[in-house]
Length: 110
Length: 124
Image (tube, rainbow over all chains, first blue to last red; front, top):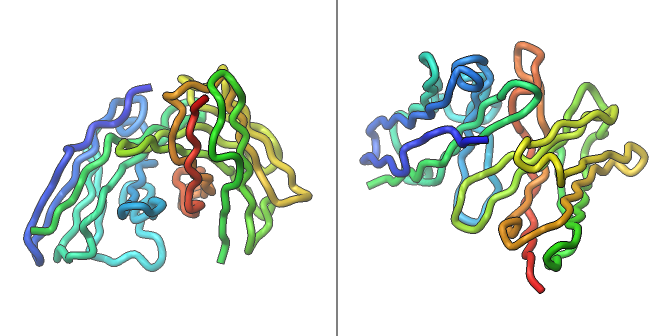
């Protein structure tokens, strides 16, 4: 099954806001409000930072927010900090009990 | 605090079967309504969902791997398992075990706990 499409790289200066997009189809992102986002630092396991499009897990900063329009979901990081530099992956439920991940985006803090 | 830990061989020969165990601590594998799953990541590449097993035993798997993947659970040991048959070099990756959790709508929508991952290399 095809991965969701994300930009390979997104960058911003400290304090700025950046948005990472995640584009799928009506069979995944567009069909369900079950998009989640994961932050992965080098050599570490991914960590959940957003689920069900716009719900933040306990302990995740409110600088992270999520949204969805049609077949595209977005993760916005406001007040960018050095520790936000990492890879970010979206994921969506896909029909028949399956899941699909995005291609991943490298966030660089300039 | 729940913890997940993968274990298994670090090297598997081509055409053989990859078998991994995920041990869950800090909580019961049968508590509530849970799915338990597997995700892999080849070096320098993205994440790929492999499959999941329900705490009561039913399972789902990635259609691209379905003919080679099986997942199972042992409630008495608080463990769940992955078997991937007929492996090739393309199956070389870090394998993560995960908990597939329900969101606010009551649907198993995301992965909230991850193991640290185990590198499995397919090589003769």
